[in-house]
Image (cartoon, rainbow, N blue to C red; front, side):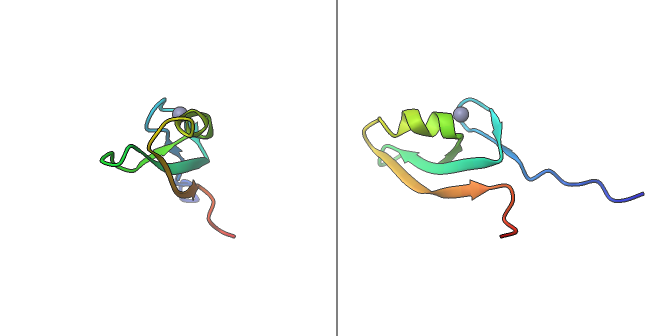
Length: 62
Ligand SMILES: [Zn+2]
């Protein structure tokens, strides 16, 4: 039997939606960095204190 494929997909810290692409953002200067989905990032980007810290992708083979 082949080994099971390990899922590297993560869930959004805000809406718990599973997405192959998440964004590392900070919402307010003292807030921790969180990974959120594209939909939540769009909303977060309109808030004061929003900072973008990079993109996380499930598939990093390229
Ligand atoms: Zn979300």
